[in-house]
Image 1 (cartoon, rainbow, N blue to C red):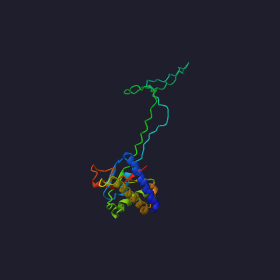
Image 2: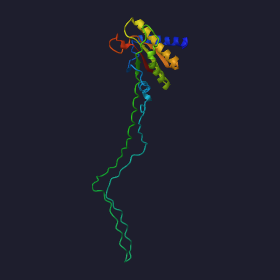
Image 3: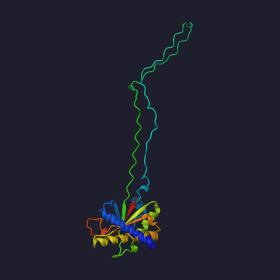
Image 4: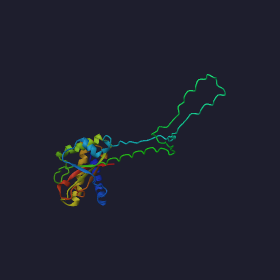
Length: 242
């Protein structure tokens, strides 16, 4: 990575960290965070970070009915066709008139009343709320006071690069986190350096456009467990940027 890109990432990390501190950490909610001890499959990462890409996630069923007049039912009643008027004179040998049946309602059917209310079309179904994207974290074992990405972390970061290439519209925030050991200011700067190092690795080795990455050092301010000194709080976390 060129020096200018590294300086840009470092400056953005420092600015974002100051904003988070001024807002007391409330601007960046933890939300759902899943920590992985092994590199997860791409399909699993996609389901967490880009849930709308899953089959059926954005499917909506909308029932519509064209405007039309309401059907009108008529009352069932006994009907008898009009009798034909008798002829003035009939031949002596006229054949008898054919039998004409009477119309009768079905005995078991009740009266059907005419309806004047229009038939309301069924309401359109509400679109399902889009599932919220989650965050993921990896425990990257940086050496003491070091911001060099260790080789043991390569498979984790490579999987993030694979996700970004698979979903070119996605932008991610790279967050560095520490435990509470050491001074707070030192931990904040160390987390910034490590977040920049991971972002730099994605740009250099995975060909990711740096414009798709936002770097942030959060120091010890957002522990995963109640005990801030617990080493499980040391991690690099990735969250979706809308």
